[in-house]
Length: 289
Image (cartoon, rainbow, N blue to C red; front, side, top):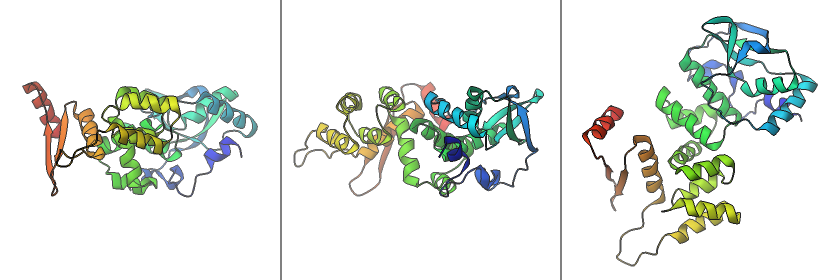
């Protein structure tokens, strides 16, 4: 089966653009398109709101070959540029547009919608997540933006995207990775499973280098992390929970301040945020508001 066929035939487990924009925009009233048409390829522009930053050259070349053989079978979703009625911004379908340029296409089919910046960003994020075109970190950042900027909950995203809540929660946890591990994840040296296992390590960066150099699988990585933690003598301090440590990293990354969770044996606990100046405290209060 060609790559263009795969892209144009939605999986029954996913809710794609064919379900209507109201499905993508959380049940909002259906947005009627201005119409379907064919436009010169030079009239199309990529969007600055596009969450995807990496386009694999081999995949683009394969898609270009398929387009040469069969054409572009699914229209791009676009909106008009405010300052030019003949120019269109791509909301969904930039990958097809890039491959069509490689294939030497002169015109592309589009469906034009009148979308605000907010709607265009939300559709772009959801469309990429549904098609599984994003890297784990791009997907995690997309979920984070949908939660922070559009007020979605993890449960809502799970239902609308046909994914489990744990899948979304685990990916968001990856945003707490230190910089070197994020780079290794983006380059493919680590999988999302490796990265989640390493989140529980006291010093994950050297362990990540070991995992990549030795070609360890996820279970071996989990064992490596367990062996890194020192044994605790009877009556000594309790070993810290890996999920709590990962949540600390996530909160610290989002707030820009050191965060520490201190659970109690019988449930509950305390959350402490360390600030070093009144300016940091004022900034924290503004974020919490």
